[in-house]
Image (cartoon, rainbow, N blue to C red):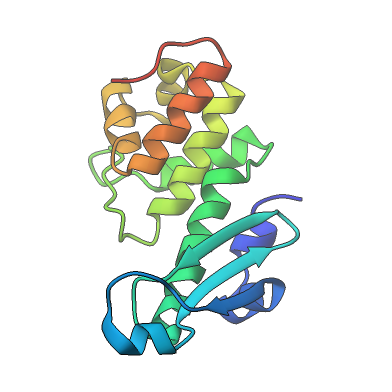
Length: 168
């Protein structure tokens, strides 16, 4: 199924599709952390993705964090087969100067990440071809991929799959 099947869902709808486990997290935090089941693990059976959040002593905060991480995982791990729609999505994420310059907190960041990884697969991880298709420089595309360590890692995994050297 296409990634948009899940990313278009509201938080409540996505959470209803997940199996939610709560448990006691280990580590620092004092007595409250050791007595309450504040850590949250989300399993999304349709995709097989699993994420956890256990930083906070609040189960509510950890549930919200885990849900954000699930959305990020959907963009990182689920690929769409339509390079044309991915190219259009990535082109819309450009700024007024025509560059990909999105911060991780920008709501367009993770959809742009998903689109860029889709295009890397479509163009066999040739950065210059992806950059040309989207209308940005290769350096700008690399800079965008470097914004988040997980995105950088995934891009290098795709490059390795197609026999290219890792990005530095």
